[in-house]
Image (cartoon, rainbow over all chains, first blue to last red; front, side, top):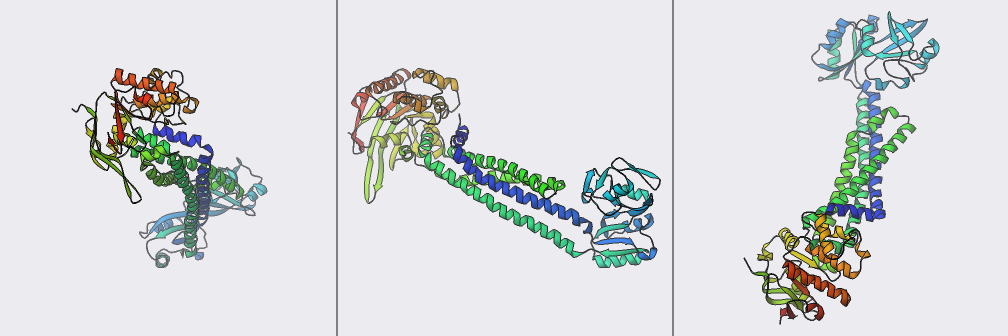
Length: 350
Length: 218
């Protein structure tokens, strides 16, 4: 038996009070996890949806060329420009399959393709499946190559096939439909320079609105964190209250501990351990409930593919560590009071 | 090395009650030899309990020098005082002061410097409490609880036991039994013992009786 066992014992023997104290922390931690998690997931979703518009310049074949693809030499010229970086290429082309004009599009980030069935790789739209009678595992012949369909997307009323960008580029002899890039110069000046120096290309600059949208989602994350933080703070205040009452009730017990030679530091430590334990337990239970809430919300909002983004490790560990640390801090004042008790008066306490 | 377990040199303990100063100890000079068994008696308010609290470093004197086993308590830090209490002093209180939520074995092992369950059980056995290790204080009689308190006082092999009215809550049979145990500890183990009591029958077990009045020994 040591003081830490004794602290654990104190929580156990006052089950209802400990549970009610933890309830405050549980609600706070769960709210924090749900609000921040869902907002983080939504932020992720917005970023995934808008990332394709996040560029400084987009370079496409000029309409005067009559082609929708840039050849490998033009691509190489663009990529060798020193003031461009963070390149993202997209290759899109059309192919006539069994009398139907099908659009093929290279995919860099499969998160942008909503799958109905199957996995990423070669994903056909529902219309392609319906019109051509294809399913997962069917073979589709494109430019003398056979591709095996791996999934069906929820793209409707369009004959689309999504394939890996690498495959798309390879199928078109390294041609590219669009190059997205960032620049460290003024986008409009850079765009003008490229159009002047590389023939047959058209350059557009990005929309500032996209950056604003993404900044707004970041602000929403901060705001939700603030609101949920207040919920956790209310829980922590209940820890201060409980520990103060506990110290008052146990005045005589603390007097006995002092009389039998426990140091002020040891007594302070046991009170802090007890409040920390309440915070840790409440934090862990709150996080488990919060995760459950996230899964339910994600299913209701049909955002299940963003569940991993909704429960980042930093959030889970941060909430547990925060609840524990704040509870330890909440125990500081009661612990100081306990350690400063006058032994003689404490022993007289009824 | 001092032959005294307790030395008080002109020790004062003054309380302020409104505008009035009350001297619970009024220049107390007192020495108790190692291995002595002493009863301190006197009317209520004579300073007996204050003497015991100062001797046990539970309270600090307003002025004067106090030594326990040669160590001057006022020169020690709060932490060192706590360690001295744990290592050198065993307390027995009138109302037992056991931890009600712990078993009697846990009551003994809690203040142990090095947890040794076997040693705790042996001490309880010597107090006639064999087989009651898992009972809680509320399940024992007053006499048994006081024996647990004595066992706890002995757990760290103290140089001195300070007992505040150890028989105050007991019937005469249990009171005699407790005093017998204390006498045996003094005679056979050489533990110095000081008891504060109103009970002349309890005091009769000791080797010397000090009478206190108005904060001093008379």
